[in-house]
Length: 376
Image 1 (tube, helix red, strand yellow):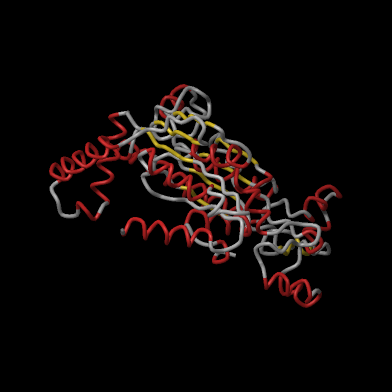
Image 2: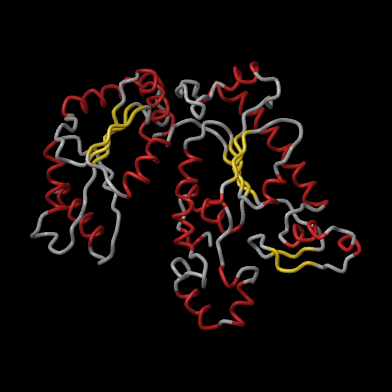
């Protein structure tokens, strides 16, 4: 039948290439029979000879009526099935569909399976036979994802002094040490200057303008928050506390709007958000540092092409996995940013990231759901 044909088509698509792959079978798989079929297709020695395939089930369970109603409203507002339909009629139809689905639904009870159960939008997780990369990456990601709406801002650090030239990833390429403004600096200040630690006048103006933008966006977020979803019930840990207004009343030194800031460890990035008005929550993460070009640090690609044409040819042929001598590849950088993405996903308030071109390219690819090669 059509269902079997679609399954065979999916199987062919997922396995025809002889490469290590991760496939997501986005279907309800709501009965023991359907789940057994998937196991048979993935683990059958006859069908998968010499190609062992692991299988993990992810089950989402929601019994919080407030969350269910919030999801219902989101569904009928965004699904083409209910376009132009009266809200009450659409809600009644959706409830009937869910009731039919519940009649046939069978929760996972077989503890010989590898599975992850997510309760009430990651409020609680239950994992069974989960090891390796799954436990290190997928489980934290499932715990982080939430349906709260908040803006995430990505930007580069402010500009350095005019005497400094940097590459596209903000590494210093040259400094005019004969400039009159530089000659009077101490040896320590000159060393910091060589690292590009200091913002110039333009960079400081950018920092001030960035603060004004964050203030406007943060206050706007507070006004809209109640109409989006109340995310105050996020636990009692320090990281989970999202009831921002109570925090402001308890500590007058806090800013009047919520904002979480992540920067690289490069001093320019930290100085870009060194605002005196309020104490914002900031974290400096080495994972947000630029792609490590190793022996080619401070060189633009055009220069590398001229001086090392053979290596540059490898980069052109495979830009994602080609590693810079003594440094990283973009594939290495993706792995380095995994924990950053989890940090960003779990935020329930506006978030600002001050980083550099290579890292921002990959973050943009993630949030836009674009192939990495389109953002490199």
